[in-house]
Image (cartoon, rainbow, N blue to C red; front, side, top):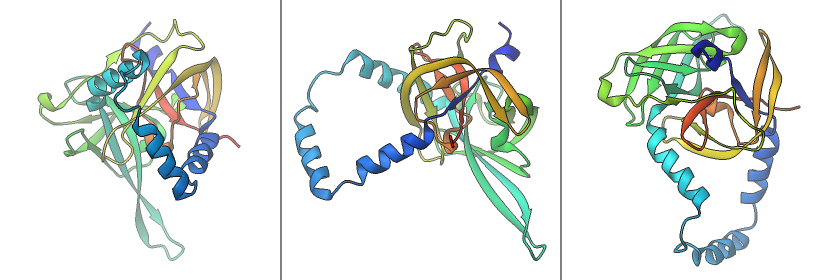
Length: 234
């Protein structure tokens, strides 16, 4: 499988709206309920980690430094024809020691300025070196010391199975990387974008929000099998 074919695999979560509602309802319970939850869960803190938890921790600790935050600045006109800058955020993943980063095209679309924030909070100006709007993929490049870059390991996306474990890492605000987990819930889906249809899309139930768009989806070996795209279902 060629690298071109690999990066055509774009992921989306059709359950993002339900996921946001679920977390809101869960954590908006009365304070007394949250306190009881904290007290009852305290007794389990010393229990051994499960195999699944150990996998999550290992992958996060070994792969999260290669996931970056991307800030895009676009210029928009007001009703009074004044130019106003607008910022958007997304995530990306480092793919080599030369500073190349893969993200979603919609994250950097129409941007006048692009900045990438690494795991150590250092920020670098980025430039576009390749775009594929139809497949919602873009490649950026930053100039920074090689020792600051932690390239991802690329896996295979042609032997995936529905039901297998996946992990999504994002860096939505440049503060810290986030990890969510789930399974592959469907394969060979079709995703409609502003530029057409993307075929052979992977669907996952791992929670993905817009700020995590452009981050990697990983298998249980920590290999990248696709690029996450947050889609709001209607």
